[in-house]
Length: 126
Image (tube, rainbow, N blue to C red):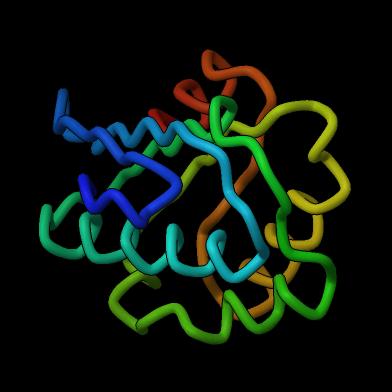
């Protein structure tokens, strides 16, 4: 997304049946994270991929807390229920990634957060 008002950039490629997303930038607010998530979801759905690895380790800034995680996951479209998603986060974001993972799994989505991209890829390929 190249909009100068957007504080992040999402690069993506489809390789070996896996959609790889790499997001960089600096989020200013939690609302920016929600916009990023919606942009990523649009890319995922447009690609038709059934497996996704999203690397957000180079995306700085605030992440949703417990309530924000629930709100975010409740905005996921039903089509994502058929997609296996692995996300790679920085270790310092482990609390917020747990909130997002729990909220997603509790609503039937196949999502898992990792700090190691190799572990994420192995999980996706199982």
